[in-house]
Length: 272
Image (tube, rainbow, N blue to C red):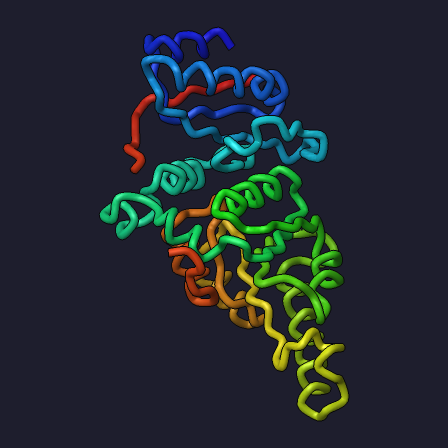
């Protein structure tokens, strides 16, 4: 942690900090104080944090302290292509359009997501907290579920949710199968509503149920896109969230209810 004071006084400057999962507890204890001191020092730019998670170590006991500052979780072993994509997205250069437009449309996203009831589904507790934290920053009311089975139960009509962000790779019931079952439940109640077998009160005063479900995936190959459509998902967003893409997907379902980072070369890495 000896590098943090040197960042406060301007001797060192980093745009990105990579923190190993095993070093996170100690790092998280120092980070809030560091952020406060940094804001009063010569360098007021807060670096983006990437948490390097080890799939062989449980993430359920990872401290939630300072988790709101995490831009993305990257699974080890590190792959150059995945690391590059994650860094580009977090720094606002995930695609050509976003680089040209000067960053993610944060105000527009807040207008779309403010007050929306969003269900986030992911079996990895760290990914779950990061995704939930990102959506909360835009004013969404977020509920979390750590399995496809729980998602199915929570999205059984009638329910309160405006949209669902669903991880596609989960044990037992993955995101694809969970979505198929949710669509079957919706089709069933919609048919009963159509034939007058369910009164409006029992159906939540909704005439046609279809909750937007967006896949959360680091795999954006064509096969994954086709599978999302096949199981009747409404789209997909990359992990970590990239503002421009998130806006494009969310804007297809929500209307606004409220009317740049520079990529630097230095990267600090914390490990155990």
